Amino acid sequence: MPATFGGLLDHGRVEDVSLKWDTWKPVRASRWSLDLVRPEFLSLRPGTPQKPVRRTAWLDGLRGFAALMVYLHHNQLWAHNIHGNLVFENSFGYEGRHYFAALPVVRHFFSGGHFAVAIFFVISGYVLSLRSLSQIQKGEHQSSADSVGSALFRRWLRLYLPVIAVTLLWISERHWTRIWIDFGELKSTYREELKTWYYTFKNYSFVFLTGNMYEFTSLYHPHSWSIPIEFKGSIIVYTALSAFSKCKTNARLWGEMGLIFYFLYIVDGWYGALFMSGMLLCDLDLLALGDQLPHFLSILEGFKELIFFHLFIAALYLGGVPSCESPEYEHLLSKSPGWIWLSHLTPQAVFDAKWFYLFWGAFFVVASIPRLPWLKQFFEMRFCQYLARISFALYLIHGPVIWTLADRLYAATGFSREEHKEHISGWVDAFPLSKKGPLGLELAFWAPQLIILPVTLYVAEVVTKIFDEPSVKFSNWLYRKSLVQPLSRRS
Image (tube, rainbow, N blue to C red; front, side, top):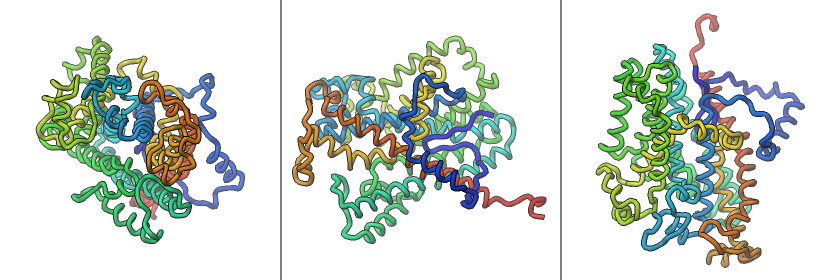
């Protein structure tokens, strides 16, 4: 059976988990405490031996690297404020602005956050369907149904428990320290804050919400907007797995492609298309392992590296679609150099056109990497695998680190705003550094990263250990406890 996964938003098979605290000896507790506070990224040595990589380790590495791109995107936009948004999130040459950071491909290291989220969704579709598709292809339909049921039971807990923990800690810190943050407004009392948090969170976490999903994110964690979409996409994948479980191989593949077309061209369901494309890629990869690919695909085997190299190049370009928020986005796209003709491909059904192009970019990337050995090896590297382990926590906590620590360091090195002069005047230009050079490559931006990045990685490690990994274990344990015991065991 294919290897299981551990990383952002996903986990493998249900494991036996004991939550009996009396089994923890003092020595074990002390070791756990040391593990909790020991920075793991400092122990990454290029020369140290590495465990044999799993067949699908590249997926985890890609997910971790994408999380780092989100980190860079949000730090760049925060430091450079409105000017940075106008450059980073538009195309090279738009309205006569020619910046290195806006060049195709290069732009991913400055504003690749949206592309990274699209890649997250494709990876999730792949990972969530891996175990069940493997069983379906072996004819183990009951096992597949059990896997889907188990995953669906645990999914809400897996996604939302870390969000609950991080946001509650965040609002508690703000009320207890009264630290000034240039994001959101504190309620007059902690009790009122908790009440508002509860009212907005319960709606935000409801999969069938028809109201404002972004009320919670606008108040407490804007970067967590993708979590409800992750949950919706998970439901789509589990439903499709159930619906196609007893179909013939070709019928199942046609059904997956039909759903992608439906979500992308018929209705405004771009995220559904991203999840289903991950499921389709997983299905094809498993069929390839068993030498069961449809004939028209198998005959292209000798050309796959050539084909997927060009698809990867196309993906890098499409993933750099301008993402500036504008009520006239399609008009903006049609005026963007390099996108004037491509803008005519936008389907009528898509409300936010950038996700159409991000779909194809993310789909091509995930399809290409395992078929390009040199690229696959990069994502199997130790650092990418480290990022994979902490990627969910990194996604959740890089925002609070920006609002508290990074904002002050940027103000100190020269990226100050009027709000800084009013609320944290002592930090303004405290350590002025050069802002010369290409936008996004200034010393005043990168010098603070010597502090911000290690702190962010360290906090992500701690959050992974105390919230992320325990949420996986707790959801598995709860599912085990809820199962009907076999008659032999009950007797």
